[in-house]
Image: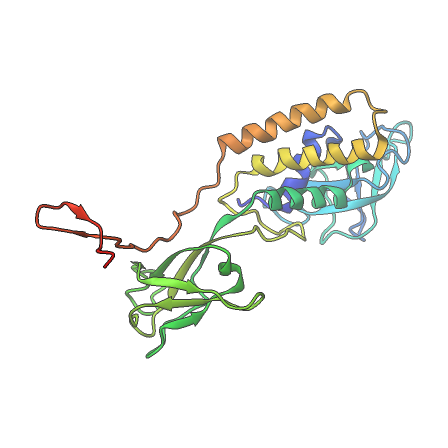
Length: 300
């Protein structure tokens, strides 16, 4: 399964040590706004303003609300009362059921902060390889094409299909006789072919671009990025935020920062982001004679 914002925020919170996992002991209410766990014995309001992640549907069918999150509005302890209820500010798409596995996190690092730091970590990755096979088709008597804006930054490869509109058998062929012509800022650059390509064919563009921002819990992480590159960096950024907020009041904070800084560096080394080589065109500066000796052009 492709990793998404739900996973990344949960894993980051788990690294930070702010979550506890549990299982629903009764079915939730019909308004889809709670989870009941009689074993949840923290003090009343302990989880207020924190985050709940529904990790697993007990029906084992990956059905809703598995993979959804909610913000905690109110927590009633199960200690003494035997109830233990976590109420949400907004409803899930389905009610929680007996046996559903969940995790609940403290408000110290809430959903909004976790999401912000995950996206900051994605931005710090630099660029990632992106493939686009839908934007451009070749046209008769046309050698110049507007690029998608995202491809302006660093177009690496251009391919053309050999079979027309065959989604299972494109037989892509790599093209080398092209270059990018720059245009005004904010407008599409031009992909220029030196020769007329075969017409009415799909083009595949492979370029290096910034990872799209993840906004909702189902937004996906690129498969070219190992999740450890994101979650260790996001955890580090959360800790740096907290240090800025409270100063040196927490004596363990500097130690945690050093640890996650080390883990983020390790992840960067272990899981590099690999993209195709930059496009280059052969530039002949001299000539060779019959004995393959290189000579420079005359300056005359």
